[in-house]
Image (spheres, one colour):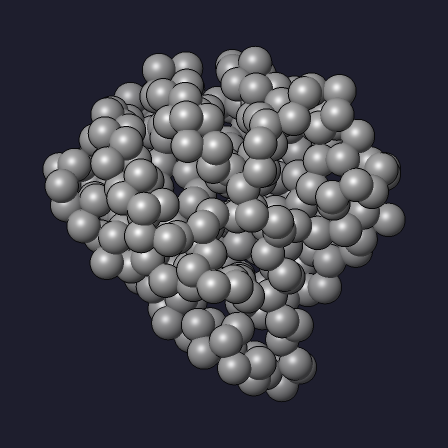
Length: 283
């Protein structure tokens, strides 16, 4: 599927899905911050601790030995994930630490610019990739691994998962994890549902495959191409300890996103902000 076709389909689906995502976000923010239980009455586990602050890029061989867990050796499988009733919107940030995430890529035109800017300022980010895009651009996933970024699963073709049966949901997620493992060096530990549309089957399958559901708490809405200045203002105003920022490095013309990153990243660093990536332990 070509990028322009993918963008057209996503915009058509977005109108019907945004309400689901907004309702889920509103209902889960309090749960994750206060530790109260979900609708089922079962306690919601606290959000996993954030990873270390951004660090210098490691050589490929060194990174693959200790990708996310400090000096611990790489192991085969992630710890089992519990079935959640809501996605993670924030993390337990220390000081002024926040998280940058980019969806829908990798894109051969825009993702390299994003990676270049992050490398310039020695900042790590999380990339939620779509399998069909990753399959075309495996070299970019390898670069993400070599430069210390985290790669998560954003399904194969960016469908509205709540309209698929369990078999369809699993296929979308598993195919993407397979491509990520081949190109990035390990299977993903984090999953984000397209359009922020979650249901019980999505949470259950996500957990069965060993991933945690990561959403966002600051939406740049860059996919609407509102202008570079607007994107910058939204992210700077939303900057706070523990927030997860959503932007996109694919799915359309992302030149505004690239220009905005070039503006707000040095400003936030000058303001004392720090950036991190999510971390989970391996078995």
